[in-house]
Image: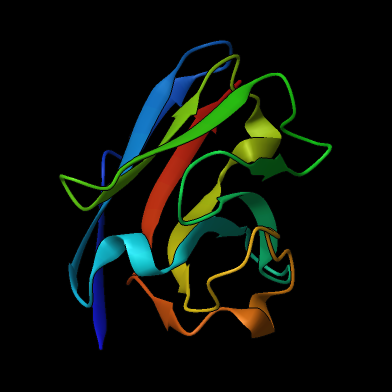
Amino acid sequence: QVQLVESGGGLVQAGGSLRLSCAASGRAFSDYAMGWFRQAPGKEREFVAGIVWSGVISRYADSVKGRFTISRDNAKYTVSLQMNSLKPEDTAVYYCAADLSRTLVVATDREKYNYWGQGIQVTVSS
């Protein structure tokens, strides 16, 4: 079992920055990959970024590449998403998720993820 809790969301102006964090508990954190997804009103949940268990490989959606950075601290059981140059279209509920397969491939399909946080709102005003 894995429990995930997001923090750090809020309201920011376009061009600003936010840092999301996800605290994990339960199973050993270095056993699994982590991902961030987001869901805007009326849209499907989409992949944003992911990082493998060791932290050596990460992957990003094209829409956030160059603006967002995912990182993890296995000692602290946390994964973070640094979001810079935010745009109104980044407005969504953001979720962290755990993929228990211990591979060096970052899954972008939400079906591959076994556990999810409750989500946190990020709103970017124009």
